[in-house]
Image (cartoon, rainbow, N blue to C red; front, side, top):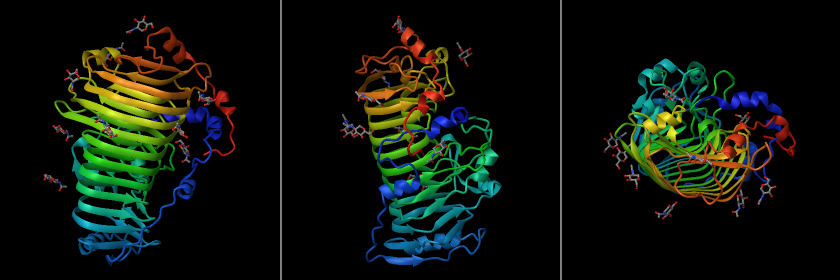
Length: 458
Ligand SMILES: *[C@@H]1O[C@H](CO)[C@@H](O)[C@H](O)[C@H]1NC(C)=O
Ligand SMILES: *[C@@H]1O[C@H](CO)[C@@H](O)[C@H](O)[C@H]1NC(C)=O
Ligand SMILES: *[C@@H]1O[C@H](CO)[C@@H](O)[C@H](O)[C@H]1NC(C)=O
Ligand SMILES: *[C@@H]1O[C@H](CO)[C@@H](O)[C@H](O)[C@H]1NC(C)=O
Ligand SMILES: *[C@@H]1O[C@H](CO)[C@@H](O)[C@H](O)[C@H]1NC(C)=O
Ligand SMILES: *[C@@H]1O[C@H](CO)[C@@H](O)[C@H](O)[C@H]1NC(C)=O
Ligand SMILES: *[C@@H]1O[C@H](CO)[C@@H](O)[C@H](O)[C@H]1NC(C)=O
Ligand SMILES: *[C@@H]1O[C@H](CO)[C@@H](O)[C@H](O)[C@H]1NC(C)=O
Ligand SMILES: *[C@@H]1O[C@H](CO)[C@@H](O)[C@H](O)[C@H]1NC(C)=O
């Protein structure tokens, strides 16, 4: 939740320049597009609908866009061509969609009238979310080489210094792409850019697919980071696929929340994120939530907080549930804090005493971390992975296989386990052990990373 990376980068900017990526791994959005080109599939036989584009940056075409979707609904394609911009300045209820294609090769951009949107946006009670628009219905395809632009800079500037999960925070920021009650929704090729808050949020939906998408949120103001711009969030979803995504945002990368079943992720590059995060879940008092049957593979995570992550809430007035059957496979870490991180004493750095007094009621079972490589940032010395299971919760059959993540501190990497039932398949020491305290005490200097080969930095 804190801009923890910045202080590190400031202290170690030389180290960042020397980041060494395995051969063939894209280092920029243009390299990503070259490696994974998006191939536009021709729409055969669908009726084409065109709308007028915005004449100026303030020319709101929301009404035209809505009319265009109505005309293209049930079998047509709305075309938003390259070189054209479509400014949206009012909230849109798009939950009527049924067999529609939207070919976006130009740009859809939201206005940045923050007071207007805060007064008029749609709302969702989960973490006090607001939304520019709501998509829903069935067989919806948004595809093309275009940009969906949340125009987030002003929102980040005005949010600067605030925290999203602070219960007193009243400055709400919209989600860039929100869908509810959608069945069969795919997003392909699109660049999701500069969301004010979460980039996507899928609620009570199934058969969701994202392919060949880029997601970036970059601030021109070092005092106003693009906070909480998570790539993917969800509630109540089934059958989600993410294939080939380039993500450079602040906060979680792929992060299903309560009630997610059957998720498949293959090939993601996440820079500067909080990790591939299951959860958080178990936030709301009395509410059941779960995540199950998840397979995430071929992920390159750089310059972020954690790599593979699972988080559930502890504390007074939390919910209950489980995370079960999650595989994280082929993860390459470069300069992350912990390469694998399980925390069922989330949120707010809740300490051991408080977690014991108000434990999590979320069990975490059958998790596999398979084939992890790369190196950490050294923030936690030689400790490269950490698993903390809350007292009273069950964390069982958590396994590591082919794990080779090193620390820039050198020496033997250490994995820390507290409250994990039975073994993890590798040596693991508790946080109060001599080994863990020695590993955590070590501090690496930038110099120890600077020796890495540095031909093509990010
Ligand atoms: C989704 O469906 C539920 C139940 O049918 C309904 O209550 C809710 O209003 C729908 N949401 C939207 C955005 O249409
Ligand atoms: C990766 O993230 C770091 C830290 O947020 C940033 O400085 C760098 O520009 C990013 N790299 C790319 C390729 O976006
Ligand atoms: C998740 O599913 C449970 C039922 O299994 C339900 O009680 C709960 O309300 C759902 N959570 C959300 C966030 O909808
Ligand atoms: C675990 O999840 C995978 C999908 O990732 C699924 O194929 C498998 O059947 C699940 N295992 C169990 C025991 O449900
Ligand atoms: C957690 O696991 C324990 C032991 O199997 C079980 O008694 C408890 O009901 C589980 N809790 C939840 C929320 O599923
Ligand atoms: C392990 O993961 C790396 C990428 O992080 C991949 O190049 C390698 O092929 C994987 N090894 C196996 C045995 O799958
Ligand atoms: C743990 O957190 C509680 C509640 O914030 C605080 O009262 C207590 O002093 C903390 N204990 C330790 C050992 O830091
Ligand atoms: C572990 O990774 C390091 C470099 O990151 C490499 O030199 C070493 O050969 C690897 N060990 C195994 C067993 O793969
Ligand atoms: C932690 O490990 C040390 C030694 O490895 C052991 O003496 C101690 O009892 C353990 N503490 C807990 C809470 O398991």
